[in-house]
Length: 138
View (cartoon, rainbow, N blue to C red):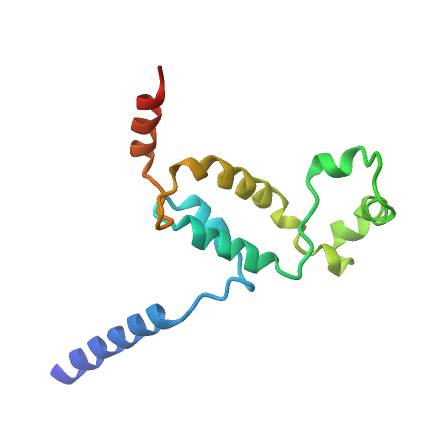
């Protein structure tokens, strides 16, 4: 019985050690989405994850950029005309279209969180943000 308990504890320790020592591969998975929703996330780390994920990939156009297409380049007009291919997944270039809304949210998050970022990259908690906002009001 002791042997089983010892084996179980050693397995837990090794799993915990591997989880902490492994670096997250930001280019393969959109960790920045979870970081944006986490109030304890590091601002600079979230930006690093976003930039690493989109490095070498085409960031999807926002809706208003594809609606009118006034003054659009030939490539952008072609992208708009091939919506059926994008919908059914024929076009490999547009496989990240599902992150369109998340990209827009992240860009907004970056702007709104910037005043609340400390020098180490940590973000003030929402209660601290409200307190700071109330102090700044006339």
